[in-house]
Image 1 (cartoon, rainbow, N blue to C red):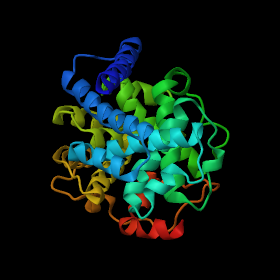
Image 2: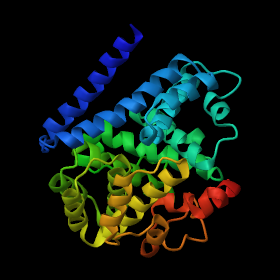
Image 3: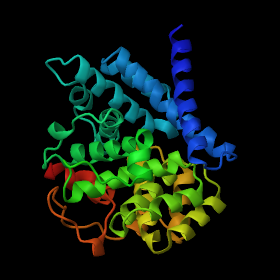
Length: 322
């Protein structure tokens, strides 16, 4: 009975996504990508529902272990959505998200905190209390998820009308919001390269590198795109191809850190960078030595996708800085 209810709800979510594609006028004949979006969304939905039903670590870990390995990162996001939703509507003495993440690796934490941002962003809920400047492993992914949901559910304002990031973001956090927003562009345009390019071109040039970076990360992380689509994406990005490449390399690196590497992510990283047989570390080259602050404006000449900072020394340095 419960499984039937979950299936009905996930079908509703996918119907909403399909309706978005139709309303936006994007191509809907790429059935391979549509199926891939369904698989990713379904993995998140299953763990989201499990986290709403129980906050017991063993129950949630068992559920995670039941999900296909290559979808593990998306399943962690679902845990973040569900537990943060519980924390919001039924607060307890112990924060459920923090309790679940006790002792977890920074990479693992990053994916769960993305889910927290997804929960907050869908309803445009207040995010200020999550923005402690020193807690970068927590803060930055939450902002990313927040930006993503603004594009997924409020795309008329934040994509078509190119609304600026909410006023509570300043300095580098505005870049991260746009990187999350960019991830949504890949999904709401159903990997339609023409529409992706047109969507980003409507934004001021100062925001476009972040948006292309978000597209590159989503494309490489989600998978499902044919090589020809990846090549067309690299061409469409023009001078922003470096943003695609760095973000895609981050997607490959995060999968490596989570232990669920995938061939399609490696291929996307190679194609978007133009560096065949390159490892993520080859593409990322040197990790930046200094972290940007949430208030400081980062130098556009040394643009970095925020996850580049999160893979410095396999996330050890940023964890210590938190």
